[in-house]
Length: 556
Image 1 (cartoon, rainbow, N blue to C red):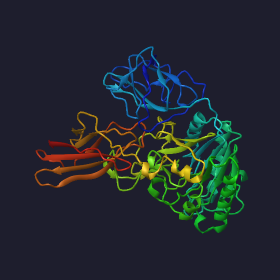
Image 2 (cartoon, rainbow, N blue to C red; image 1 turned 30 degrees about the vertical axis):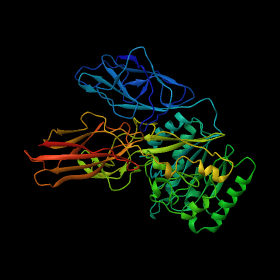
Image 3 (cartoon, helix red, strand yellow; image 1 turned 180 degrees about the vertical axis):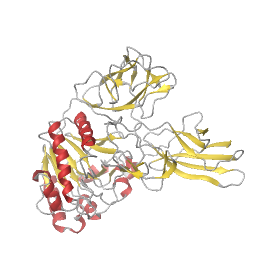
């Protein structure tokens, strides 16, 4: 394959939707999808070209990066910077002018030749300064590993992504549900998780990285956890909770399976937090806390939360940043961070993610009731002297249905064309004030400060009608834009003669994929020739802000 190097002229725009990718400072000549076949001849005009490669792999950098791309001779590289899929209308590469990335950005590229396009490949870039953090911590949860066959290659990819952002993290937190025990004797599976993690820690040279585990509801028992891992990974003294020092940063692991009714654990946590925050100079220093289940009335509007006493106990300590999993709820959603008396953060899931229930997804078989996607996500946390930065990362966000061949499956295997992309813009937690109350008053991610900007349709034809190869009619929605993300579309299609609603649905926007599709096709069931319809669609964000209604009258 003969390849041409193409540079792109543009300065990155602000991150508008999810994405980030891996990268160590030494880059091969070109990084991209692993389907590249180097040395083969260039393709004909009637065949799709291979996906482009990029000169600088995605990852964390302490300076702006200049990107050039490689593609087959005769192919045109087109790109987007907002998480959408490149089309023939997207910005084209310009020879000799690199694309400079100066802020956190997802770059998605595809090669075009004639009427054919390659698969799109996404790369994510975190652009930092030379300031060194006190600690770098990866927070992940809900690993749900049960064998080597489905997980060895997957976790090689996941640890490659970790290494591309934090080559030597100070700690990796596995925040509960390492296995998938349902009272059916799967406790020994913890040893499989340990083997996979140990192999990858060694492979990546993360010899000094602490691995710290919390107890989840699918982890069989505390005894099973202790039997499955090195003692330093779960150094509890009997109750499944413990304290750690991560490069001078205080970290507490709580057992949310027992917290509400465990007076000893509650007293221990409150006592230690009181002692630490009373020390001179500690008022504005963050304290990290991990626990599997969300605390009540906090992140993601309190969905799947429990342990109201944990919320009560942490409320006296605005220094606390509490990370939780369990819900599998995606971390694309900005409701994943919540501040009132302390900071709560939903860490996503490493096996599959969920979306609020009550929505439908567009699948190959049409609209389907779905609330799960085989997307894997984690958090990358950097603690500095005056702030804590939290970046949301996709380990894998390629577009797949959770059902494969009619069977539920979250075991899609690498390579992933989305590995390391940003699943949302970063969050910065600052502890600003001379008293606890002042710190709370200065919180930025509060219910009162929620985003009120509504999505908007920017296409001149936001709605159109398309006919599939099987003759079926569908309403095509050109994706709307939002300053954070479009969560779903409220869709109604009415038979104008009878007044019957043939479609009435809340259709998810596919925001949890990278890149996301540029349009969604909503099937019109049993559309008869000559029937007149009216479609009404609103774009809705995660906070319920709604676009103006857009309409389309059409006849089948």
